Amino acid sequence: MASQIGSKKVVVIGGGFAGVALIKKLIKKNFDVTLIDAHNYHQFQPLFYQVASGRLGPSSISTALRKLFGHNDNFHFRLGKVANVDVNAKHVTLVNNTQIDYDYLIIATGCTNNYFGNANVAKNSYGMKSTPQASALRNRILLNLEEIYYAAPEDK
Image (cartoon, rainbow, N blue to C red):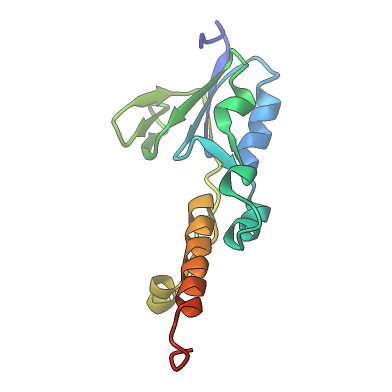
C-alpha cells in the first residue's frame, strides 16, 4: 500500500490490545502506520482459558491484523521479530535484517510468563499468554484424558 505523502511514519511494535487500540486512533490521523508483530493475528487474551479447556477453537479468539486495518492506505503490516532499535538513526531492524524507518516509535510488546526464577516451574508447566500456549495446554489435557480412559484398572 502506498504511503501518504508528507505524513509522519509511526512504527508500532506489538499487535496486542495496546498496539491495536493506538493504531485505531492513529489510522484516522495523518500518520503512516507500520505494525510489526511476531504473529499475523491479534489474540483476545481474556478467552485463552476457553481455548485451553476446549470450549473455543483458537480461530474464535484470533483476528488477522491485516483484516483489522488492511483497508486503510496508511497502514502497513510486517510479520517479524525486532532485533534492534536504533533511536539515533530512527529505524527498527528485524531479525531478517530488514530496516524500517520511523518518526515515532511505540513499543507495545505486552508481557511474557513470569516463573519468578523457579526453573522447575518453568520447565514443568504450561503458560497461557498466547493462542499457541493455550492450544498446547488443551492438547495436553486431552491426551491425558485419553491415556486415563484406556489405562488398565490397576493403573487408574
